[in-house]
Structure formats: C-alpha cells, structure tokens
Length: 95
Image (cartoon, rainbow, N blue to C red; front, side):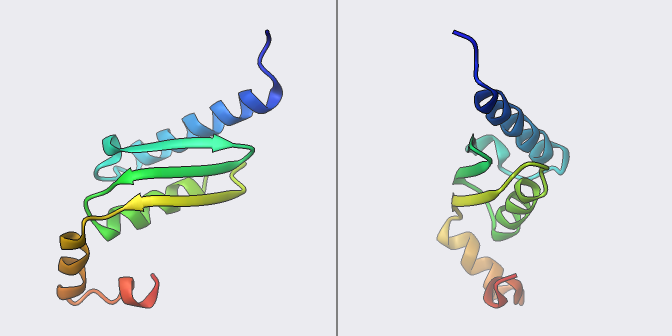
C-alpha cells in the first residue's frame, strides 16, 4: 500500500516541528513527543520550565502548514513555582 498524501504531509510536518525544536535548543526536548494529524500538532510530555514550554509551543506554531497546536505538555509544579517566585510575570500574564 502506498502512503496517502495526508500521511506524507503528517510525517513531513512532524519532522519539521522536531527539527525546529532541536534547532532552537528547547531544553528537555528529548522528553516530549510530537504527533501531527491533518496539520494539528499534538505535543505531549514534560518540560523542565515554563520558558521551555513556551518556546516549544512557539516553535511548533511557526512551522509552515501547522493549523493548530494541542498542548499536552506538563511542567513540574516546583519549576512553575520557581518561575513565579523569581519575579517573572509572563506566566501570570499569560505570556
């Protein structure tokens, strides 16, 4: 059976998203999974900080052909509290 155009596009978008994450140096990228279905990127796993999560989602959003992002990423509570306690307001403001 030959792959359909949709399967090819999904695989290509997945590879481009992963490349973007690596090229931007997203911390913890080895602990996440990226899956694309019909232009919808599902990103799941755990990242070490809110900043890493924000960068990860931004990288995926900027890949040409991506229609929508489904964020299933988790950041440990301690990392979130550290971010809020350090004077960072971006997490509160919805950064």
